[in-house]
Length: 46
Image (tube, rainbow, N blue to C red; front, side):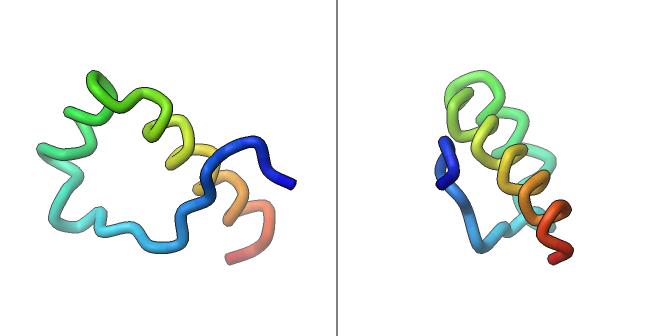
């Protein structure tokens, strides 16, 4: 089992300039979950 929320859909194209930088300030756990999801997807070969 994973010790973070696993996200399956990312809308990075429209959100990387405003929403995601804001998340690093106000949604730190969610930002960590995003990063852990990216790393898990890499490990899984997705």
